[in-house]
Structure formats: structure tokens, C-alpha cells
Amino acid sequence: MPGSSTLPLNEALLRPGMRVALAVSGGADSVALLLAMLQRAPALGLVLSVAHVNHGLRGADADHDEAFVRDLAAAHNLEFFLHRCDTRAAAAENREGIEEAARNLRYAFFRALVAEQKVDAVATAHTLNDQAETVLLKLLRGAWTEGLGGIHPIYEVPGGRILRPLLAVKRSEIESYLVENDQKWHLDDTNFDTTYTRNRIRNELLPSLATYNPQVEKQLSTLSTLARDEEAYWQGELGKLLPSLLLPGRPVRGGGRASSTLPGVASLSIEVERLRTLHPAVRRRVLRAALSQLNQSVGFDAVEELLVLCGFSGDATAPKRLDLPGGVRAERTPRELRLQRLSAAPEQPPKYSLLVPGEAVASDFGLIFRAICRVSCGYPPATIRTPQNGDRVRLRHAGGPKRLKEVFERMRVVVSEREAWPLVEWQGELVWMRGVELESELAASVGLEISTAPLTDLSVK
Image (tube, helix red, strand yellow):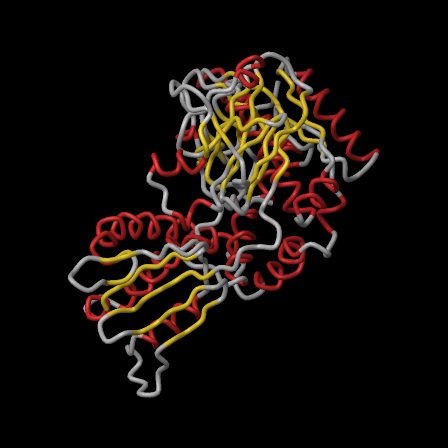
């Protein structure tokens, strides 16, 4: 068992009897997390296990790490969950960078452990240093408040949580703790590869900033806490304010408003005088929320251009129309600011492969798809796609197959949204559709269940 030296875990994240899988890579941070949790487990009534991902990126070194973590789990009589994956293949298939693909595969595994009820939570070993690196990275990329919130202590996933109990602990404390407990760890040489932006921040930029303020990492971590609290407050305020400010579509003669029925078009309006009465900070938030409802994310400069368009800058030469990145057109009328998404249909509709069982990040839909197969595994993958001519589905408790047009009409889905509606096809049959329950004898025969979660930037290393 670990020695007497301890680490300051955030025990508020834990509850008695919780089954927690510890994400252990073999590096110092995760090995320290394992030892610290083992020290607390008896008093807190925790049931611990170990989860390890072999990304298939470092050849024999990765296999050596896997064996080290497996032996570490066995030494403490902990259940060992292993996931091997081909990160390079996933990166190529999903058009992602290696870091992004590895992160998505890793968290897909963690979420699957929770969704399959093998554990109640997964704990990762992110430290105060990781938090500082993340905040600085977000700052350099031009993040808003939510980005400066960095790594959250708790990340909710279907069926449980992902926890970060070491966010207040410095990396120097981690290594001292391991030395005091005579515990070895593995060093990943890729942590010093300055090809990766995060490594340059860690090994070059932060040490330089520390010459100006030795507490720079602590200050950045504090900034993340303040930003998360600010963002939570603003989201609550906007939830009360937006329904009365954001008007759908365009006004029509005789009263009321009309939405466009052209494919790929969505629009909303805001009364300029209502915006004028708001504090500048609230105006920016409202405009960002409006663009978000059009599925468009833009930076600070674009929001400032909208403020000029509304005439809040006092510039008499302000334009009356503005085209923003991503196919959003803004137009100023005497009374309103009108925002319209005119996104051209892509040459190829979005399509993703979903392993059965397995998980896929479908960025075009803003969703993470998960397939659980309760009978056995090894089935052909499913396909996440949009509607095609001739598609039919069988609604639960609704008799024979129905055309998608009938289903959309029953659901009151506007025409402009139908072309991008997510579906899951498996072995030639549609087995999942957003917003309705489908009946499939094929899926039922093997216990196939499809679920989704919002796609979230986890801001992790």
C-alpha cells in the first residue's frame, strides 16, 4: 500500500460507495492519482479500478506502458480496463489531428465505461499545471469566458461523470509525492516534442512567463475558476433574457413572423432599440447567443462588426449588410438586426462510421453517438448519416414503415432542418432517428441501443 505522504485531493467530487475508474497512462500524474485514491478509498468507501488506453502511437514504448499499468493494477488488486485503438487511422478517417483523435478515442472509452454501468465515474489526473496550460492556450486562440474556464472539475456524461480531483495540485508536488512513496512512473518522451503546441506552452512559454511572475500557473488556474463562475452566472441571466429578445424569421404584413422554407436557411431578428438599452457586455452576449442559435460560432471581431452594423459605434458610414464567416448574413433594417444562415449544402453529406459496440464523434451534427450491443460484439459498423430519397422507418407502436416526410410532418420539423437531420443506419436498416423511437427487429435481436450526447470541447491534454 502507499506510504503516509498524501496529496490534497478534491474529496468533494466523491461520494461514499462510488465506483471510480482511474485513468492511468503510466505517467507521474496518473500514477500519483492512483496512489492518492488508494489512500482515501477505505475512509470514503470507494470501489476503485484502473482504465488504460493504448493509442498505438509509440510502438514498444506504448506496450511497455500498458504492461506497467496492468502490473500496477494487479499489485493493488484492482480491476483493469484496457482499450487498444489505432489513433492514426481514426485521425485520417475523421480528418483530425493526432492529439484530437487520441483525446476523442480516450474519452469515448471513458464514457463507454460509464454508459455500460461498469463504473459510476472516471477520474483523470489533470493538475494545476494542466489547467494553466489550457487557459493560456485558450487565451492565445482568442477564447471567450467559457474557454478561459479551462478544465472543469466535473464533466457530466450520460450515466455518470468524469472527475478531475487533482486540479489544485502542482506537478512538482506530484513528483515529490511519488518519490516520498518510493513509487516509480514512466516518462513519455512525446511530452517534450515541441511539434505540439501544448508542449511548447509547457516547456517554453510558461517558464518564460514565470520570470515575470513565479506564480503565473497559480494565477492562470485562479482565472479559470473565476471564468467558470462568471460563465455560469451569465448563462442563467441569458436564459431569462433571450426568449423576449430573439425573434424568429422576418415580420410579415398583418402581424406575426415567417421563417424561410428554403433548404439550408435559418433566420432570426433582434430589435435594435432593445439592444441599445442593454449594457455593452450584455449586447455582446446576446449577439453571440443569436449566432449560436444559427449554429454559427464566431470570434470577438465578428461580434464587434455586428455592433457597428447596429449603429452603436457612431460611425455614419456603417454598412447596412455584413457577411460573416460560415455563411451568416447580417442585415440592418430601420427597426431590426436580421441574421440569416445561408449555408450552401456540402458536396457530400456528412457521414460517420459507428462501431457496434463503440462510439463516434459526429462534429457536423454536434453529437457524440454511442452504440451498446448487449448480446455480443463484433458486428458490422453502423453509419451515421442524413436522410436519403426512399428512406423509411418503423415508429414504435405505429404499425408499418413510414416515409421520413410523414415522420417529419408529425414531428413538425421545418423543411429547412430536414436535410441535416441525423439518422443511424445498420445493416441496411434505419435503427435510430433523433426525436422519435424506432422499432427494429434486427436491432432488438442483438440488444443494440443507440444514444447521443452533446459534443463538448473537453479542453484536455
